[in-house]
Image (spheres, rainbow, N blue to C red):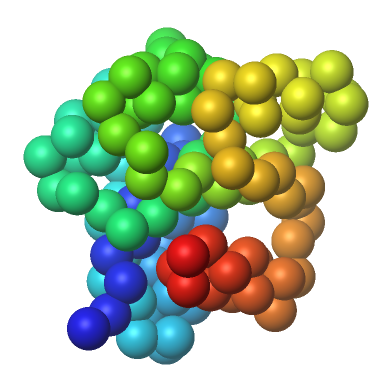
Length: 119
């Protein structure tokens, strides 16, 4: 059975890339281009893992993470261009399981997904 991965990212080019990449690794990909849709998909589609950007218009990744944590313990990996230690620590405090800084290598991303999938 393939993993169901929800990507919550406001940049369509990145979600398209992740969709193609993760599909090559036999993963099913759900895409949300904003936080509200991401929360709704997390609630209704029961993903196995979430890839979450922090910097999004409207509901940002920190709020998305806190909201999802209020109803689910699904692993959340933040994938972000934010490099401030303070903001990255805030993501972990909000409930993220791991943080990867962009640009992240394909090998590192897939390894991190597999690490949480095995748990």
